[in-house]
Length: 330
Ligand code: TXA
Ligand code: MG
Image (cartoon, rainbow, N blue to C red; front, top):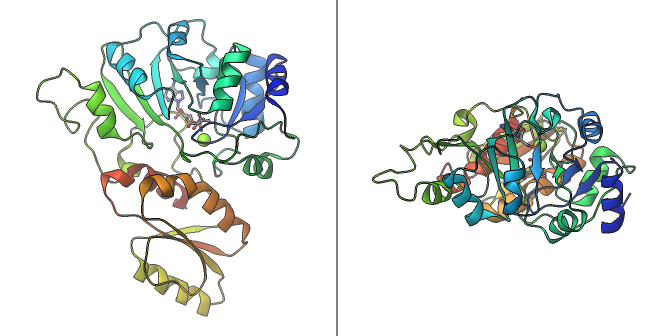
């Protein structure tokens, strides 16, 4: 059910949930101070209670309402990247709902860079907790239609068009002493974080500071954080990953001969497989923007298997590789 900005605000104030647009993915929002409302998010998503939620705030001045300390490193990161696809995990004040925190001593905060989300936060005066507006472990939504297809027509949706970043925010935790750690890769990459976070630290590179090494296989090296499941962001159709076009085309041929139907997601130029295929431009930001909508479209084709061409294992592709490895985990 589509709702206006005013209706969305009224529902949130009444303790209802509303799906809202952000620049990354659509979020399933509720008043971050209302435990009854927050529990509805977990029930609708079928999400385990120990998976903490991100609190979306209107601007940086609200951070101190939530945290016991806002370390200099975190202030620099927030100033550089907010509004934007960066979530900061910081030591939480005692009053912060344990439902939001998933019983962690920390709280995750972000100022989203979407005009409707910002209007909602500013006009309502609310802060809203919002995980991605999809069922637990399924593909994240980047359009209002995706939300309705995944959660049903009864969910109120504030339609803000297609998300232009397309994958979830980069998550960085910052301890009271300023030590920082990348918890989830996103389109603000580790090098960009390190460049801002490490200002003033002599002779420190991204690979030997607290953020750990820049490893190309993010799915193997991302630290364990609550709510980061190996099986995540998955289409319903089984998905197979291929490092190159030749092996993908060969698999397509073998499947087709065995009467197994397939469809492919390709990146950049190359020989086309014999099955239906969707081709994305060979650029990380373009692939991120279109990744989930492409997987949603391929999923809707109702074939037996999806064949996905992986981008190169280079730093610029880490966030996209992370999501594809999780989607492909069987
Ligand atoms: O781009 C995004 O971040 C989107 C949009 C809607 O803002 N939201 C999103 O939420 O991706 P979700 O619930 O799908 O992922 C939130 C993740 C959790 O799974 C967990 O890994 C991490 O944020 N998180 C939240 N609070 C945390 C905390 N206190 N400590 C560690 N990790 C936390
Ligand atoms: Mg999610």
